[in-house]
Amino acid sequence: MMWQLLFLLLPVAAFTGWYLGRRGEKLVLPNLKNAIPSDYFLGLTYLINEEPDRAVDVLIKLLEVNGDTAETHLALGALFRQRGEVDRAIRIHQNLIARPNLDKSLRIHVMLELGQDYLKAGVLDRAEKLFLELVSIGGEVKRSLQYLQTIYEQEKEWFKAIQTAEKLQLMTRIPMQSIIAHYYCELAAKELLDNRVDEAQAHLKLAVRTDKHCVRGCLALADLAIQEGEYKSALKQLKLVKSNDPDYIAETIEPIRQCYHHLGQEQLLFDYLWECLEEHPRISVILALSDLIRQREGDRPAIDFVAEQIRHHPSLRGLNRLIHLYLGNTVGDTKDKLELLNNLVTQLLTRKPVYRCVQCGFSGNQLYWQCPSCHQWSTVRAIQGIEGD
Ligand SMILES: [Zn+2]
Image: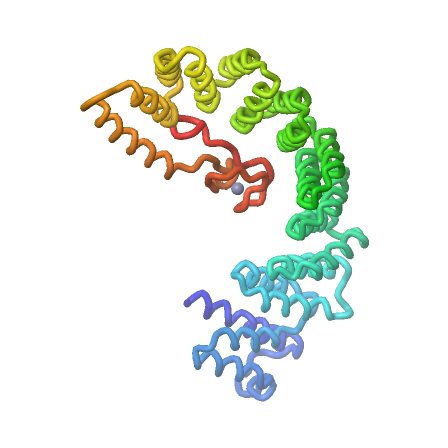
């Protein structure tokens, strides 16, 4: 409350300073009273009546905009926006921008602030217009392009997002290929919703051409190939994921299993999974291999395999599988105890998230290509370690 009062007095102090500076007079209270605008007393009345919101509005009006006070207005506007009082920030910035004698650099600064106000208020069309104008006049181009990119992502205007990211890349030399590839994948997803497979495929090819490590593009192209019965082509895409970004291996196991199954090449599936295990010993690979071993050789070799693997790579999901395998081969009291343990581990696992954003820590059971919390791309990944993959 104390700081709020101090803050509220700021415009009053500024007004007083302005008044004295303008008149070149010393502070003589009786004379000052006559010159103080009625709004000052109105503001004080609001303060006394504990209506700080109305008081701030009235007192801010007292701050005449000129070269000396414009920075104060800008600081106030930014402060209001940070506090979530976007309407008030917009009013301050609109008031500033309406001044015809504002110099160019200050006008650019105000436009950038007002654009951010509109962005925060969700008035995206007005924000876009301002940032586009800034780019066209060459003011704060980099930041304006970054805000435009955010706007186009929110509006799902993927073509515009691509153009903006390309301009940014050219300007800043910061690589944007992986994000641009996601935009192409988004375009493909949109086409697929309308069943336009060829158009979707074209966008996905552009995605993997833009970013050769684009896992999402590879997975989506493989998915389309599987639907067309082109299993060899799907396998080619899926196997790229292992070298491009092994964090996503788990996403490839089921489609790879499907492809080899349709091709009647179970041995090649077995060999590929062993290769994955040696290079990237993830629990998803261990579980897929244990399924194959069980089908081929029965429960006992599968139990030995899982037990050996989780000794080296401790994992709750591995333990769960081991208990399951034992349950089918146990009777009596031991079986009852195993069932109890099985229930406990299963309950524990259902409460554990599968994916987590490496940027902000958001977690859940769904793989998002853009984090719903921090809006970064490719940061949501399978959790590793004892509770994860
Ligand atoms: Zn995040």
